[in-house]
Image (cartoon, rainbow, N blue to C red):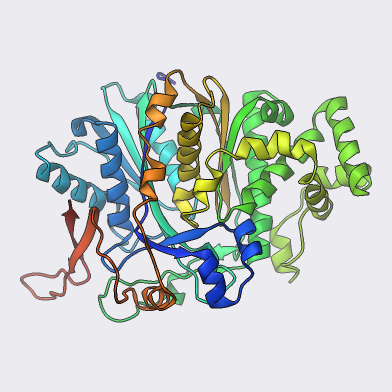
Length: 487
């Protein structure tokens, strides 16, 4: 690799329409204590004049403004999403909006020679786009930068188990040579992938457009919660194993060196479970010290350590759970039981929970943002570290992305000198301040129809101005969105 590459900035945008989960629990007779502990505090919803493209463009514009990026230097603009509503174009739509806004501000547009790919793989699309952008920079000889924006809209049917884990938002990342926030160890990123059929999918044949050309396409997923959790854990374990093997280190040694860890989070509790499992697996391969600690955890939990070790060395085919009709079973039942007890230990607090604490509270207020979830958490964590004067300089940072289907990426990073000044430009907390709490009636109408009475209009960013209805020999623009910039 010719250059050190990495991340130099983040731009955040979430729609202003907020559902308070405590109020939602009252509306739906769900337990607030459990919802708060497992999911979070609130989630955001897209408005009637918003799409994944307007949300993405709003994040990119914030990034350009907050970091004073010269648009002519942008040689790569990638979009990672699973909420596309156009099966032809994607990132170029975002570029078009950005160019219009820049011209309105008296600034030059993004370089005409900019690459504009869109990447899709469930919640991992943004991380795959990040890898593409970093690879572009690693071989680019000119003084160029790259922007990758992860944007998504998570919607679930009302009354489903996924309903409280909805969300909408976008995170744009500035990628540069000699980065000013995070240097990414590109050559040692760990990868894993397996086809798991039915953990989480969005078959087009299942989804319908409600009404005609009203911008309200509901991309409701097919999902199986327990099976999806099993897939997540199994795939991230394999990606982490691949990463540490490529690095020539043990997983336990690497975990102990971390200043912070961030993982894909469909909801608050999931990443803690996954990292706890990963740490326990790491102990099994950490020589006598690791075995001693693992023995102690097993003894505390009343589990036979040899049986646990045998399970950890096994290679279960998770897809067999689906084939056999045993979809609610665990692939690693003993280790799952061990992790539940481990979560209550002081070692968990020291080695897992504290490493995942940065930014966790802010993340409880945006909901599930699919592709944007991991970049958002990294951004929130860096901002909080800068705010609280927690010195992360030269610390190892782990980021683990996951996408149902399944695939995972384990990314080793390092915080660079001078990072705090750049982290303070993220303005994650500020991005959360502009919101309208929805009433029960507004939430239900916005969810079901795409609009509701009494909604405040967005005061910044991009909106859908109109949708084409022409289908003539002179002009065919039926279904095409036209956008405008709100200042």
